[in-house]
Amino acid sequence: MAAKRGKVYLVGAGPGAPELITVKGVRCIAEADVLIYDYLAAKALLGHARPTCECIYVGKQGGDHTLAQEEINRLIVAKAKAGKIVTRLKGGDPFIFGRGGEEAEVLAAAGITFEIVPGVTSAIAAPAYAGIPLTHRQFTSTVAFVTGHEDPEKDDSNIDWESLAKGIGTLVFLMGVKNLPHIVDCLRRYGRPADTPVAMVRWGTTSRQQTVTGTLDTIVECARSAGMRAPAIIIIGRVVRLRDTLQWFERRPLLGKQIVVTRARAQASDLVRRLNELGAECLECPTIQVVAPESWAPLDVAIAALSSYHWLIFTSVNGVDAFFERLSSQGLDVRALGHVRTAAIGPATAERLRCFGLNTDILPSTYQAESVVAAFAKEPIQGLRILLPRATEARAVLPEQLRRMGAEVDEVPAYRTVSAEQDPDSLIAGLRDNRIDMVTFTSSSTVHNFKALLPEKSAQDLLKGVVVACIGSITAETAKNLGFQVDIIADVFTIEGLCDAIVKYYRRSR
Image (cartoon, rainbow, N blue to C red; front, side, top):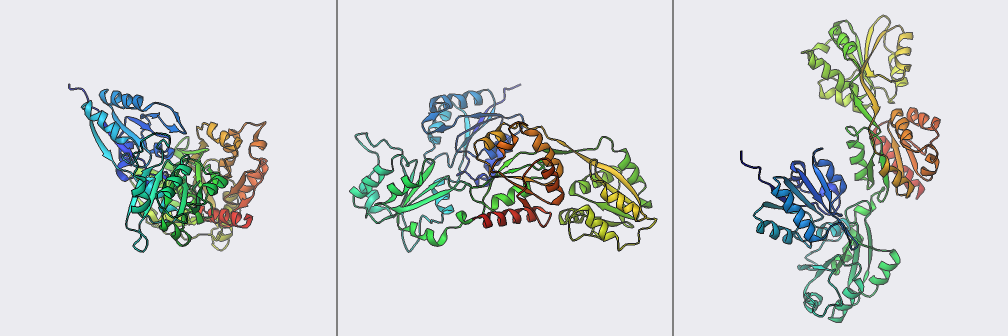
């Protein structure tokens, strides 16, 4: 059998925001046997890799090189010659000041098959996120990308400063924070007017984005006063004036906030996506995991007796999914429920029911068990049979109250929530370094399991100054009983309601 041939993908990871990687870039990560990634490649992108993928960090930060470029080259070649599919993930675009050309030359010389997957460079993305178009027909039709990393002490510069100063409308310098005074001096010396607008954008496209503006005459002092450091890009030209009108990203209400999401990983995407849209950076710390009940027998028995039930009540999306999974395993579908009326807690649960072809007959105005009980006060349920498939550890109030109203309730386990395996080191480090602004809880079990992650003796100190947000009153009560200071309780017990409450909190605090 012929030996497996290796291949290398040189992939641009984009400017920082994980969603700005290309579709092909994501596919290359997913197919990789080995993933070799840089400092500026968003760590969230590693989540697209297979569990068996070997992930190797080779980042360079502020002159501190994990591996020298020659060693990185040797590593890529060695892994490919071992028959591996290698994805070399580089911040921005591999061919824009990313040394991707050098790596491609090494691969070509070694006879290794490779592909180049372009990425969105920060030279374009950071100005766009700062509200600065690099070209505009009322201002300029020319733009140049320039390295700001050139040593100002060397005798001969590769940069034609006179042409840049006089002949190009917009200049974009990458890696130029340290050399900003030199860049300004060279442009001024060769005739660029002192009042030319300048912007510096740090951590462009991420929740940490920071923009400072000035002119060639003032930008050095403006940057110093603002504490601007790498990674940042510098934009010079009249187009910078458009920022006052066009800036959009930095107006997001949660920009700069780091928020912990404790929801189960499979369910966290809606909350993470919404918080990201509002400008926050999310640290996913799933404290619970949804798993099958210890036995399917009670639910299977109930499904076999569906014809005897009058009502079917769902209290969560998980309950809906588990029920229909077992229904399908018995060779049945939604037609088996033609005679049954349904009730659901919350619009998300009702929406999931609609995915299976069912409209809910009861959707209470607030989304907790007590509201379902109140809704059933208007229904004649004396002597009727109700099936309630839900979590093993759910609250007892709903079945107890329905029984008091005369119904016969079969409460059957459809799923369990268990503590997720979690390495708390990054969470604790973020709390200790005061980098975390908020923790969100979407159920009582997320509160219990989050508390278990923290060292008991230092938990209160770690959470000092951290805002605690709960999706509803029941979750908030659990949090308070466990010693948390609850700052936010959503009025509407949904993901959207929780996010709205978080935004209102920060707007009030400002």
